[in-house]
Length: 255
Ligand SMILES: Nc1ncnc2c1ncn2[C@@H]1O[C@H](COP(=O)(O)OP(=O)(O)OP(=O)(O)O)[C@@H](O)[C@H]1O
Ligand SMILES: [Mg+2]
Image 1 (cartoon, rainbow, N blue to C red):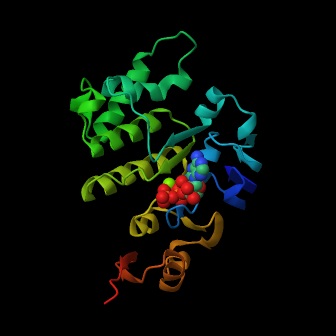
Image 2 (cartoon, rainbow, N blue to C red):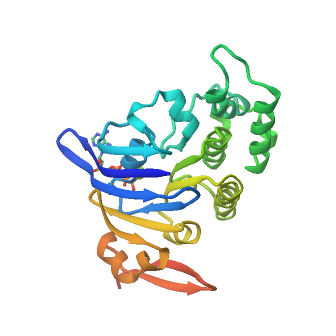
Image 3 (spheres, helix red, strand yellow):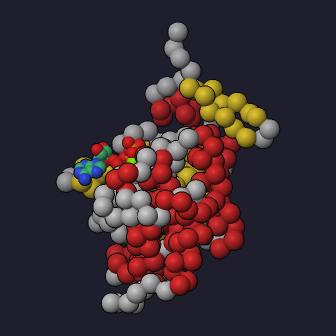
């Protein structure tokens, strides 16, 4: 579904992603992990068509750099790490922005557009806030709203950049469970960057560990989330524990 072929992204002369080749299958959830500055956001924004790259990025067989923004928005929905949010817009208006690729030029939203948005706001616990201005929302409420907007797009590919960093423990799992349920229902393909390695391992089918813009480990969570691999690349001592089949990654203090 997402095909990356020797993808390189440079800011000036410095490569932030170097010669990355990977295939992500339809319906698969791949988690990007790696230390700060490893290139996770850069790779996601390249797939979202927001930064220029060398090599080829194809989504559903279409070359991303050849697509119009409207066409790309029907294929790919993106939750940025640092979304730009218009403070005076209401929650209801913002989530409807996700429907833009489905609304004709000069068209108005339909009952169906409003229904889709209403269901998502309810699922993300924002149903009572439709009239609230974005400036009045908490960090976690805003983050759930940005996810609602992306899901409202109903694109087959979902790119998530730290979508739960501001959420409390319960809502973190809830938001990812919603994504996972929609993935199963609609066969969505998900590419996410998550710093919470335990959650990354619980939700992703495969993990790609980036370091300095290169994929240094790729595989199932139990192949990538090992103490040796993580300690080597994160510059911290970690323990990887097992709890009822899940891997739990715990940072260790150096005493
Ligand atoms: N617009 C830009 N101009 C110049 N350098 C940039 C730009 N955006 C990112 N970089 C650099 O590219 C590298 C990769 O950044 P990126 O944001 O992709 O990292 P990341 O893996 O998402 O990190 P984090 O975990 O902190 O979100 C970093 O060194 C960063 O400083
Ligand atoms: Mg980032």
